[in-house]
Image (cartoon, rainbow, N blue to C red; front, side):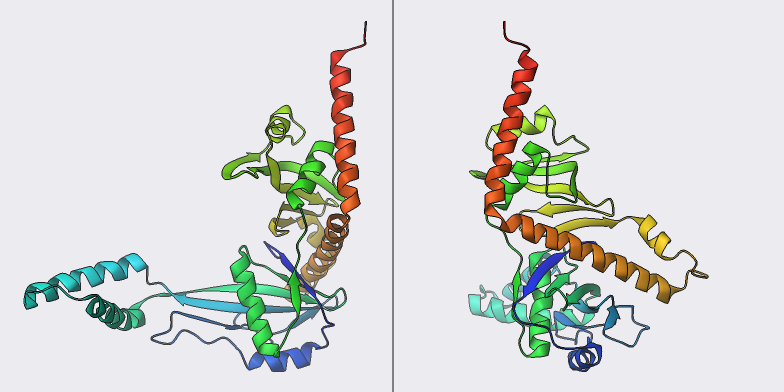
Length: 324
């Protein structure tokens, strides 16, 4: 189950099946960092190191996984070592080292320290959905997702994919919060992030708060806009949607998996994987299609804003009581 999702729209049909894609990925299979390498990135089995296949198929989707390994050598450690060596050499020679000599010393120390540095790995799954022409990467940052897309482009030779985006997404999220009516299938949860468009450093994060409360509305009235909002998709999936259209803190309802596994013996791992994949792909398909349609409709934004304003006026009139 993905924890995050960054979606890309395929501009051309994806024509490779499991076998053809497997043959391509093998050419860029993961290998560990060499003695003087800072980072490596390659394809790894999505089901873990004991598995053999680099591509898994479920519900018409292709699941792959990039593995990134990097050496842990903080700049502060390198700087400290360089500073100590500079002092030793300057005292021994009785002169100051030039800038060029310092750079050469730094490079020599890096070559000496890198092979001894620890390594850290992370696996980044990606879902290719040829049926709807979409790729979804389980990455919390845009850079990490782009690294996976770049690796896929290099592996396949070419891949035309565009990240999901929407004009004035924060304005649309704000309209959802003001009206209390996000697109059909979605309901507001109890968290959001508000930002001031005129001051990017001005941020208010709300958690465990009714988004229809006077406190949230007061921030919006001062000009702040909803940059991220907590949502629930059809009582099956909770998430936080950001204004770059990334999905974070994905949480699929465990009951769905248990229902899908009902009758399966001994919690068979293969059956559980298939059940989770079917649930995840179905829910992500529906959610992303809903967001794509809702955020592409500019007229809906104006209509929703008008409904929100009307609802606010009605609430004010009601609180004022009947006219004398």
